[in-house]
Image (tube, rainbow over all chains, first blue to last red; front, side):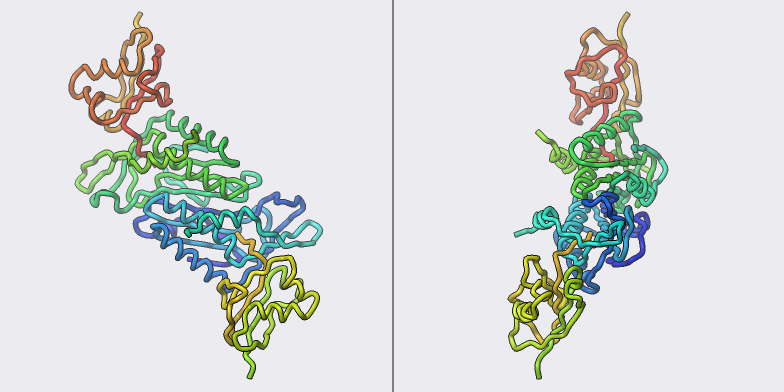
Length: 150
Length: 150
Length: 85
Length: 85
């Protein structure tokens, strides 16, 4: 289940949906939040833009890759778009598996890969009403590169 | 927050408590469930015994170690004891951090270390009313060894 | 009978170009690199497409390289490095 | 005035020995290994403590080795490898 939405989500509900997936012994989840102090002190919110259609197909493809590399039973990814205040949930990745090693690895892979290949862009909105686009971090590119298998 | 209890827990509630921890940008969680098909086909429930007092202090110590190795803001561990039916939640480990790499690493370390050093013992109860103790897995010892820093 | 492709722009690029989408005629065997050259030759602000900031390319919603050969009706997207999650 | 320690047993070991806790007098500088030997010498089922199945040791709720020297009043726990989580 992959969902791009403006609404918030409930992690308990998401995890229960994952645990309904047959012979599940392990659920690993990641939730990203709007940090209350980013690189700039005066940020009051984020605005998230995306490329409808491509976003979903990129994440579907990442979930398919995860399913080929690890033994997993279900994946749920939710990514919010639009304006998000400090402290709000941005993204959820949850993976159900029979075994915890696979659940952890697939969850971290999905999150790292999503950050460098899913077409989302973040803008920081500051107290004075100005806004500026966030730059991609080299550390995020390095993390995603670390999962390459060639 | 470390809790050993017979009652179930709500992951949404646990994650909300973690996200209240200051400048949180990332929450990684792990939930272990009673698998509907373990090594034996006729298991209908688990019974979990523990060593009260030592359990809590071992997990406190693991959380302290995690806090020394990674930049983390809050840890919550819940482990259930007593009889648990198939599909029920056994264990929850949640870690809040400013950064996702630290949240993932600390969460997986805590789970791996807990499995080989916290004094819990599992007994499988089969359909015929018999029960037998579960053996420790070599793969669990290997995973815990993998985190050693010497 | 010239073939046409759609070009979409996102995020900082959309704002700089004040354009979210346009249609562009292409020749046979045209590549994405040629489309970008054609647009950049319009001068400021379009020269940003050949500027210092990296430009990512998708063709029909899949990441692509500049050498990618286009078909009539293709949807090209140009955007800055992604920053979701 | 002999010193005494408490010995607790858990899980399979508790069931096999049909004992969850006992008190045992110890000599000066006694080690956990000596306590285990003393108990194992009681014969079946106590010889399980020196059998094939590994026995884990905690002293005062911290994992310890057989060579650990005991103090009067110490709480020793003997149990099989743990299987929680």
